Image (cartoon, rainbow, N blue to C red):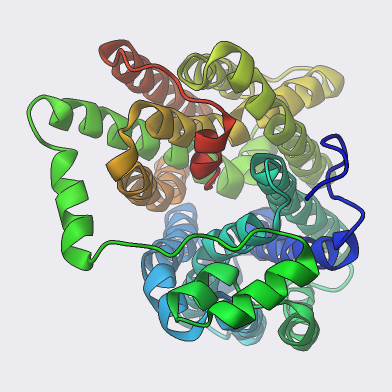
Length: 441
């Protein structure tokens, strides 16, 4: 099918395939913008006491979005199976864009919190759906690479959020930043018109001819039909707790909890905590840019490192380096040194969690691998809810100096748990095709 294994895409069908992947990339870019915008404007909201906001209520608001993401991620698969992944992606873009409008118009903290919760539902539903879409339209043998490229869009959105806050918050006001997050509404019709339907969905619905026609046009393979009932999936879940497997399963879950606590805690509170360390608002937002640049580099580097040294080792090492970097952020250093530390922390933090999923995929039997990865991700989402809340409570109690320390401890705990889980398992690591199952954020 491919004339050469070296290009990312073959000549035949490369245009349509690039279009499909590019549309998903833009959707995830807007997802990242909406996710990070709250943390970018939070220092201003706290300084101006908007809505009478305090550190503890700000932490609660941060958790509302991540709780919404938990709900969105849990229901995305069921909804996508009913209406299709394309319609779900368009619906998610519309939902989090309109929810940002609610935030921009909010006259109370209650309405603002409702907006952030609804935005979280859309954000949580979009990312796994977009990953599934690019898996369908990625060239054979390039799925992991294309997923890695897709995930850079999330961090590009984080960079964009920092610039939106720097350019608009002081001269215009914080509401303008959320109005920018409404603009993806204009992208929704483009997505609806140009994005093809998921091949997996078409096959599952018995629309094989339509799937084959799309696969021929995009020069990709038709995915195999899914097998297994709901009862089968529950059987796969039960296998994760048979014999001594329950220990392994819980280790993965706790490691994922600490990892996502760290990811979303830092994402929400980084600008505010840097302000508390004495940096100006502009510098604090510049740290967000550098942090997400590191995230982009990390996503591109981690997979290659895992292929060479093994995902379990890289996951444990990445969390150790993340913990060291986060801890150092609590020490006031020169701006240049701090920028370097922030960049390196972004490199390791944003891909360390992904390596947990890779480890679970590698160490799980094929018949319940998807269930193991899915539940590890789901349990980790509770850490995503807890992280923003924890940062707010520490600041509210006057212990903001402990914020970076607390997040560093979470990183160390994930290092320990994933390390123990890897040591307990003696299974042989599979090759790249199976690792692509782990590329879920």
